[in-house]
Image (cartoon, rainbow, N blue to C red):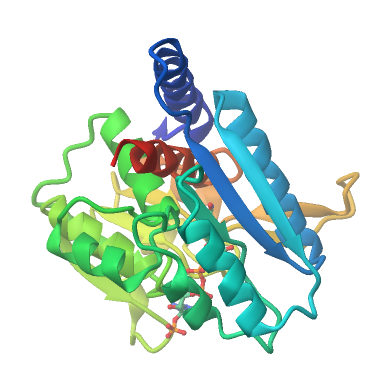
Length: 285
Ligand code: NAP
């Protein structure tokens, strides 16, 4: 069994981005600038935005975080998004989700100019992605594709089972694996006898958010396991009081798989790097 190491691959890509930014600077070209909108003070959202800010600084991007009180009205937030849409200094915009309940997330996402939509959530980018045309790909599926490509894994003809059909992971992942010439099966909470699908899969991409759901006895020998899940599970032996668990039971799956992503250190770092790749793409388009 070999590890699909998101830490190593993301570090490698980070260096490439750093070099490209340095080159742009040396040639007087525009430095990529990512803006993030953060509404309210949800702890996880603040942590994610801080990580994105840190990632930008590490590669030499400019970054701006616009913070708004949780009470901001939907119309006022729309105006803020439009201001960024019209600000030529900013190349990419992300709105950290979830938003407070009184704000329609779909309306906000669709207000972001699709040309600055580095999260790849705008229907225009979703449509382009399904057609296989140049666009901003959603960060997690994009990161997984980069990870498989780094290890020269040729997925042509493989049967890929994606567990989960969310708009940000499962659905786009299935479209991208189809473009990678896989035969794709998408499973979800209503799928009957899910193990009968995973047992026949050459690749299983688990993105359901149920810790240790996929076990070694439900995959075939030599399968590739990509574990997207990250769930905090109480663990008294840890200083933090919790451990991060993936959707795959690591020990039993690793014993049977040909390749596997660890959690943490697999898909997570690739998701972060994919946002930087999209922002770099934004400055060039
Ligand atoms: P989500 O929006 O909650 O979607 C979960 C999907 O899993 C749904 O399609 C659901 O089916 C399906 N599902 C739930 N229980 C199931 C079961 N028992 N059997 C089969 N399918 C089941 O979640 P998400 O945003 O896609 O994220 C999934 C996981 O990935 C979460 O743990 C999340 O934290 C993690 N994640 C990690 C990264 C990263 O960078 N590593 C990035 C994004 C997400 P229905 O549609 O039928 O309800």
